[in-house]
Every structure is written in structure tokens, then in C-alpha cells.
Amino acid sequence: MPELPAAALDHLVIAARTLQEGQAWLEGRLGVTLAPGGEHTQFGTHNALLSLGPDAYLEVIAINPHAPAPSRPRWFGLDTPEIQDKLENGPALIHWVASVPSLPPTPDLLELSRGENRWALTVPQDGSLPGGGVQPSLIVWHTPPPPTRLPDAGVRLASLRLGTPDPDRLRAWLDAVHFAGEVEVYEAPQPELAALLETPHGLVTL
Image (cartoon, rainbow, N blue to C red; front, top):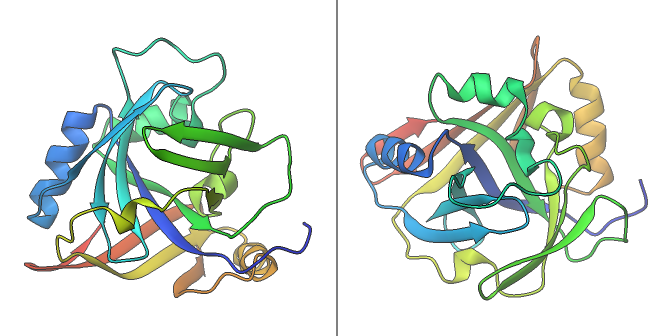
């Protein structure tokens, strides 16, 4: 991987079978209200958002049943049987995204937009989750990122835990992108993520 500027946590990705289900689940868990997001026409998805402070946020994302099917696999593995089976048990934290100031052009780097937002994001061409979800996608914001405009609901990320069968490889990847932030990487039989959130009503694990 070429030398990259320092990466930092941008946002967490929670997927659900429907946006309504995901939003109701998360609002019930956290005791706060999510902000409207919008539609992603290139991937046939839509989302709702929650501030995690001035520098990070959380999104609930789902396939938009009213949107045309995309010409390529949807991002975040939403088309895969693995993710679809997982979401049958309810919404789940499946991925995270790290921001960087710039990225070199690659086939996986897509220029995207939604409303007033403009950004570039690494998306594998097969739509798969990097590292099974524990290796972050990388994002470059061309416009101010959502946390600068989202209402502050008093929720903060206390910790992000990343389980993987190859923790040394993930640690090396995070070192290569100069990731600056507190994450716990540990050995697990399969990729898994858990986020501990501080809310106005106490600590909640997702």
C-alpha cells in the first residue's frame, strides 16, 4: 500500500433489513433520535444518521426497496447471503470507515455524492466488506463531513473492538494508514465488531 496521510475514525456502519427497522432498533437501544440521511442512487440504499461528536458519526443503512437495482454489487456486502442472513437476526454493526485527507486513484476508489455531500470512498468492486468488516473503508470528504451539521444527541464512542483471525495483519494495516484512534484488535474465530457507546442514559454496546 502506498504511503497515506494519517487516518481517523469517520463513522460506524449499522445495517438492517429495512431502514425503518434499523432506525427503530437503534433509537430504542440508545434512547435518542436519529437524523434523516438520504438516498444513495449508485447503490440503491438509504440511511439515517447520528452524531458521535464533532469528528465522527454513525449511520444506519439499508437497501431502498423503492430504488432501481444498481448496476454493480451494493456496498458493505448488502447483497451477500452472509450479510442478509446476519440481518435476519436483527440490525447489526457490520463495518467502520476511516477518513484520510487524500487517496491515490485506484479502481476501488469511487467519487460519490448525496445532496450537498461530496466524497470519495474505497468500495471493492465485488461489494465485499474489507477484512470481513473489521478493516475500515477509507473516505476522503470533499465537503464538510456530516458531524459538522448533525445535531448533537449526547452520544459518544467509548471504544471500538475488532476481532479477527489474523490480528497482526489488521494491526499492520492500521499502522500502514497511520490510524490515529483508540481501537482494540484481538484474535477471534471470525471477523466481529463491537462498539461501546456513552449515551445520556448510560453505556450501550452494539
